[in-house]
Amino acid sequence: MKNQVSVETISSSPKARPAGILGELRQNLSGGELGAAPVVLGLALIWLFFQFQDAHFLTPRNMSNLVLQISVSGTIAIGVVFVLLLGEIDLSVGSVAGASAAVLGVLMVNQDWPWWAAIIVMLAFGTFTGVIQGAWYALMGVPSFVVTLAGLLIWLGVQLHVLGDAGTLNVFDPHITAIASTFLPPFWGWVFAVLAILWFGGTRLRENGLRQRAGMTFKSAPVLLVQTIATGIALFGAVAVLNAAYGVPTAGVVLFVLVAVFDWIARRTTFGRHIYAVGGQAEAARRAGISVARIRISVFAIAGFLAAAGGLISTARLQAASTQTGGGTLLLEAIAAAVIGGTSLFGGRGRVWAALLGALVIGSVSNGLDLIGEPADVKYMVEGAILLLAVTLDSNTRRRLSFGRIVKGHVG
Image 1 (tube, helix red, strand yellow):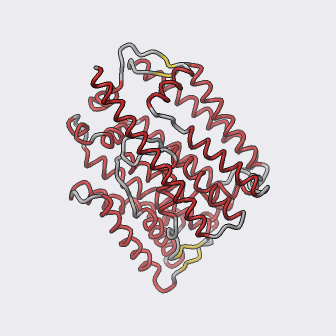
Image 2 (cartoon, rainbow, N blue to C red):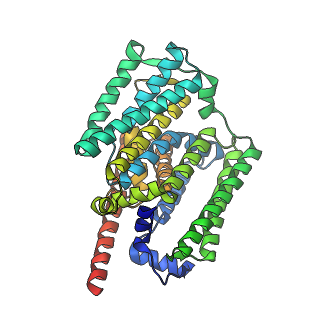
C-alpha cells in the first residue's frame, strides 16, 4: 500500500481541478499526448481507401472475417504491450504460440486428453516459457532481446519435436473449433454491447472519483459523457454490422474480454502501476520499494500465457496444430499491432487497448490488400512502412516530452 501511494502521487496536485473538453484537448496537444486519435484517424483513412478500391471491403461479411483475422495477433499483442511497457521486447511469442498449439494437439489427438485439461496444460506451458525467459532476463542480467531471440529458436525446436514426423495434427474437437466457428445470436450481441458500455462508463466514473479524492487531476463530467457516448456508438455500430452477417464472432468476444481484463489489471491494480513505474524508471521504482525482478518475471509470464491463448485460437481457426502455427508474419504483426496502437517502445507509456486498435490497423491493411489481389511482397512493404511510421511518431513524441520536462525544470 505504501508503494501504491508513492507511485500514484507522482503526478498529484493539491489544487487539482476537473479538466473540461477543450482544456483536456489543449493539455494533450501541448504535451504531445494524442491518445488513440491518430490510430483511429489512420484506421478510418485505411477503410475509406480500400472501400474505394473494392466495394466489398466494408460489407458485414468481410468485417466479420476481419474480426476473426485479428483474433490471434490481437491476443498475442496484449502480452507484447505489457513487455513494451517495461521498455523490453519479446521475440519468442510466435514460437511459444506454435509450441503451445503442438502441446494441445498431442494431448488431445495422441493422448486422448479431455479438451479442458489439454487447454489448461497448454496455457500453463505458455506461462512457464515466459517465467523461464523473464527469470533469465531479470536475474541473470541478459538483455531481453537476446533471451527471447534464443527462446524463438528453442520453442520452435520444441514445437517441431513435439509434433514429430506427423507435422500436422487435426483437432476436430467441437469445444475447440467452436472458439473460431461460432457466433453470438443477435440478441446476445446487443446484450454484450450494453454490458461493455456499462462496464466502460462505470470503471471510468470510479477511477475519476478515486483521482478526485486523491487530489489528482481528473476529468469533468462532460468529458466522461463524451467518451462513454463515443464508445457506445462504436460498440453498437460494430454489433449492428456483425449482426447483419453472422453475429458477433466468439473469437472476437474472447479478444475483447481479454483486452478489458488486462487493461483493468494494467491501470487499476498495484501490480499494473508497478509495471508503469518500472518501465518509466527502473532505478526510481527500486528505491520506492518495488521488486523490479518480480515485476519483470511476471510480465514475461503474462506474455507467455497470452501467446499460448493465441495458439489456442489459431488451432481453433485452422482446426489443426501444425509446424506452421505461430510462424510466418505472426510475430511481427503482434509487435506491430502493439506499437501502431500507441505503446511506446521506450517503456512506461501505452494502453492495453492499443493492442486492439493496432491489430485492427494491421488486419485491415492485410485484409484489404488480399481483397484487391495484391501479392505478399506488397503486403510486407506496406505493413513495414506503417510500422516504421508508428515508431517514428513514438520517437518524436518521446523527444517532445523529454524536452518539455527539461524546459519545465529550468523554469521551475
